[in-house]
Image 1 (tube, helix red, strand yellow):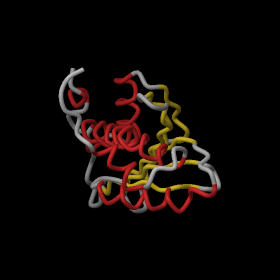
Image 2 (cartoon, rainbow, N blue to C red; image 1 turned 180 degrees about the vertical axis):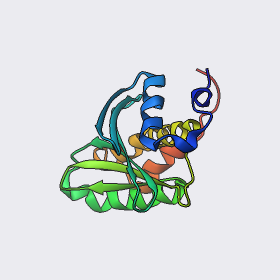
Image 3 (cartoon, helix red, strand yellow; image 1 turned 90 degrees about the horizontal axis):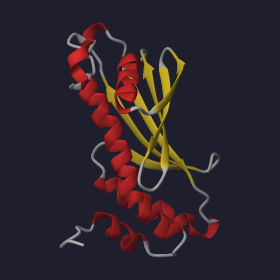
Image 4 (tube, rainbow, N blue to C red; image 1 turned 90 degrees about the vertical axis):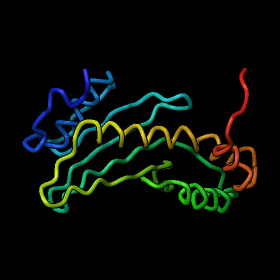
Length: 167
């Protein structure tokens, strides 16, 4: 069944209700923290990602934050920031940032729904999948920069290189 089949009139549905529906559809663990906020865990190939979506009625924005913990060595922070700049140049929807105080890598995206616009379940599913896909794609590059002491250019090239042939 398509995600939207149960929500033909999404105008009357709160965005976080839609997120909850998407989480249930995928059997992701989630916790409805508040009427306007939900947190979930999505298992990827490299990590389990913590994803929080929050609705702000003030600026009519559905905010997505996808995080994973890491503890990069202090001497590699300049290279990590350079790698994040290079990665963000390649991300058209969302961006990465480092939250040092929490030791977290963060992927952020905001869906503006101004003028009483409504998000559909497919749109929310795409937001979440884009976050996980981006984290999965760039996780190896971030690890190569921080722990294998590869240059940011080298490490990011690994993430964007096309695989050829078959195994």
